[in-house]
Image (tube, rainbow, N blue to C red; front, side, top):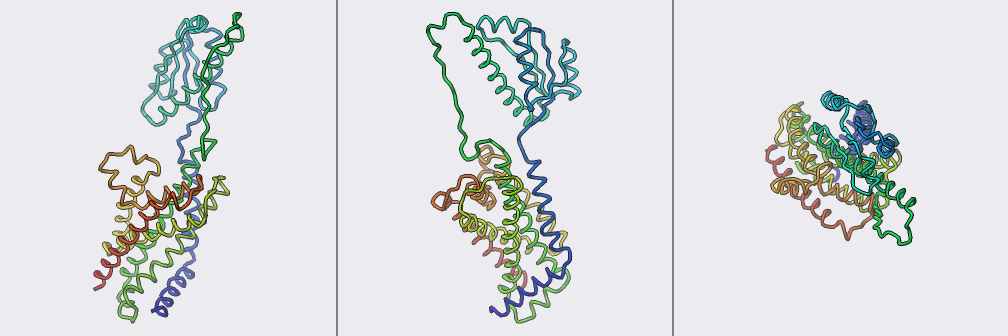
Length: 376
């Protein structure tokens, strides 16, 4: 058995070596996608186009405007005295946010009262609008704190100190709150899933399509040996892909890696076995590479959406949450993010590792049985 399996493996690696573009297809597109996802997949919003209507023209209103000008989060494109200009800026998408400072804003603050501030938001892109509103709230809170400090400094009767609450946030594991630290580990799992499933499904279908599958099966090689010979190379390629894109994320994007590499290796191996099972299962339903491509697109995209890569699983409907239970990418994202950023070990991650092991066992068993049946 081992002799026939070694011959099958040698055949696969020789085909890979003779293919001039194989290494290019396996490495360069992966790096390009890593760069694109690394820079594009982010919830951080910069330079939000902002229009300001200042009807107060006081020192306080000018100070508030300066707080928006000083930050890179907002780009003040128009400071006007006309309400029609605000409507025009929002309607023509010149501005995403419009801030209206009403007359008497400074006087109200000077009297120690809360002054209203009107904010008009273009909700066409709800995600950008919500994030921009969060940034705006932070700036207004900082402005309010500065005003309170300035009033306290000039207050004459300071014999009795004011009692206040100071909130100090201390983020763990990602002190800079850089969302790229969240996305890059997820990109590693997503790209690996796409690569391994596609390679497995297309390679076996290609053998069937060109007619070499029948020639192999009339040889002394057994179906199990053929399946191992086809999947083991892709398992090794998948490990190499994970190592490559992980190193790229660490050294190019400066993502922290503080965990145990052996836990990472174990999680990657279990995830790749499950991905190989998916690719092998797709190959049993496909007779041509076009069918394999269509099935790959039909199955892999839901796996990506239901993985928690960008959309929280807790926010999904209950029915879809149940579907995520059979998604190996969901568990691998938990493992890879925990290993990268938190440095936790097996005692914490064993439920996710066990879930991937169970999924890998079930998918490979079903795939092998279906593949043997299709060969018969």
